[in-house]
Every structure is written in structure tokens, then in C-alpha cells.
Figure (cartoon, rainbow, N blue to C red):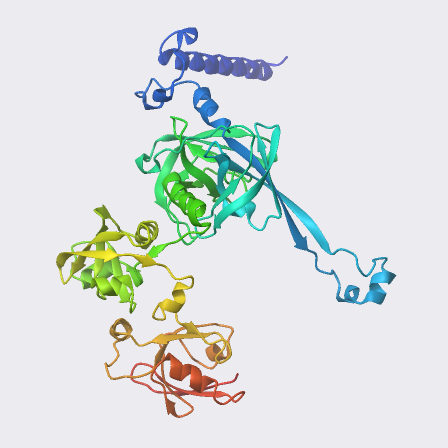
Length: 487
């Protein structure tokens, strides 16, 4: 054996000794003889640094029996792979009978959390969405068929139920509002269908909004969450449910330490509504909101960015009846600070229909208090808003959205108070309107030489001349060009 090989073996041996020594020192640093280490209790999660437990088995044992595996069947219709196969002659030619079933069954896996002894199970809506059959596997051996109690796509929460002959093990629901960044948490679920698995991490962030659902207040964690974990439990060190695992951010499809869970206080509120009514009744104010950044804060004379701006107050809504005005900034709801649109939306929507909430509002540099009795959000809130996103004209100007000239729009575009028309809020870059020069911010004042006063005029005049090109007169700054747009 030459000297270099002998030296390499010695270096490997020394490295192994150092690792063993480091492990031994780490064990004894926690309190001496490993055999004398105290058993873990739930309260051990709050131990001082340096006294952390070496095992989280007790936490896992408290919660694992109440976390189930969910498998679903979904029937999907198979498209013909070639148009010729739609012809009965060619189907017989290719050996396919005319009445052949063109459907197939897709199967998927996920997780769920038993929250009541009589069989209610919380899970993620996307786990059971469009399922024709839902099977729940308890403790890896006992299987039940579940029925859907209710679903809420806007929060990705679903509630299902199984009928069992005896009380089922449950995971106690904890207080997710008490979580702090840095708290230890454990994720329990069925990743990749391999079977029940636990992973450990910390709370990385709270109140996250990542644009997956309309209502988001995610707990972010670095506990490994993978496909199949969806609908499973995120528990604290007392074994209590603080979140329903629902999403990951990943470039590979696997865990990269950025997972998200729906907080238990939101899931529990949604569950109560689903049990009572089979659907979610959301409260609302009836406003169009805007973020308050530094520029907006300076414009409103605020010392710093805070609160949520009321861009518009829709007519005949709780907000209008309570006296809210355009330009108001909501700072607090029932004594709780709101500094983002998502936080305000979540707080109001879950407060309860008919509930009276106290608002702290900044108006003209002074704080005011207003009491608002919340109404129920319409099924299509867009129809009750004053053109918040613009009104799409489906059979007129394709790819163009417009809205009324509100006082806020006039101020933003520096328009005269007596100017009549509708403002263009968006133009698709693939549309004829874009290629002919129509742009966002243009104000349409005439169509085919007739004046446009509002959206109703716009719709009527656009549809008036059938298939003829549309002649628009627009106001763009100091210019008023004419634009002809083909249908």
C-alpha cells in the first residue's frame, strides 16, 4: 500500500472518530448519561434551549391515530385521439365497438384529520374535488367509505364524514392564533402513498398569501410536505391540530422546505358553516380596496404605510350604510390591526353574517370609529360591485374591458369632472383593439358618432351595428383620436 492510500485511510478513520466524539458530546451536553434522559412530555416543547428532547415520539403518538389516508376515484371522459375515431366505420376498422365506454377512472391519494369521534374529517378540497368515490384508511387497516359534507374552494377546505360503529380517535384542535414564528411543528400525512409519515420543522412565517386561493392566511413551515401530505395535520408540540397541510412551493415537485398549511382557526370556522348549512356564508363590507404603500401614504398625509385603502364604496352595501367613504383607510377591525387586503378580507369574511364590527378609520388625517353590521356576500359579488375589474363585452369588442368614470378614476387620470364616457381598464394584446391602437387608460367618449355616458351606453352602441367595424372616439390626454376596430 503506497503512502497516499495509507494517509487517506488514516484521514477517514480520524473523521469517523471526530463524528463519533461530536455525537457523544452532543448527547451528554443535553444532560449526561443518555440512559438517564427524561422521557418526553408535551410540555417539553417549551423547554429552555439546550434541554430539547431527543425524541418527539410522544407528540407523534398523540396525533398519528387521528390522521387518515384518503384515496379517491374520479371518472373522466377520454377524448378520441383522432377525429376519424368519431366515425362509427373507422371505430370498427380500428377494432373499437361503437358503444365502447370512453371513460376512465383516475385515482389519487391524500390525507385527512379526524376532528370528531362520530366521524367528521377535515381535509383539503383539492384532495376530494370531483371524486366519485372517497375511501378513508384508518390506522393502515380499517377502511371506510366517506361522504362529502361540504366543500369550500376559496379556502381549499373540505369536510367529509364516515360512519363507524365505535368512537374514532381524534386530533384535538389547537389555537393556531397562538403560534409564533420559530415554534416547532410536526407534519403528519401520507406522502407519495408510502404510508403515514411524520416530519418535523418550525413555523417559518405566519399570515402568508401566495395567490393560490381567494382567501389565504397560510402558516409557512419547513417541515417536509410532499404530494400526498395534502389534507394532513400540522400539529404543535402538545399534539394539537394547528393547520391543514395544503401546498408546497417547489421546482422539483418535492419538498424544498417551503410548505403551507391552512390555520386551524380558519378551518374550524369553515367546518362549522359546512356542518350547519352545507356551504360557507361569507360576510362582506361591499368595497373596492387598495394597498397603502409609501407613495399612497404620502399622498394621504400619513406618517407611514398602514391599513387598507377604500378605493370605492359600492351602493346599497353595509359599508355605505355605515358611512364609509372613498379615501378612508381602515386601520383596525374589532381592535385588531389590518395592514393588508388579504388580512382585512379574511377578518371580515369569517366574522359572521349579521355581526357588528367596530372599525378604526383614518379620514382626513384623523382617526374615527365606525360600527358596521356585516351583510352576506352575494353569490356573484362582481355583479354587486361598481365595475371593480371592468365589465367584459363578450360579443362586442373582444378582449376589451371598461368601467364607469368614478371620482377615483377621474382623480387618478386627471380627468375633468364634466367628461363623459367609459375608461378602458384592459386590452388583450392579441385582440384587434390592441393592434388598432386602443390602450388601457383611454376614455371612450363616442361610438359611431354617438356619445357614451356609461357602460350601458357602451354595450348598446357596440352591439348596434352588427358586424360592421366599430368607430371609436377616445380621449387620451389632450388628444381625441378616432380608431376603427374590426369585429
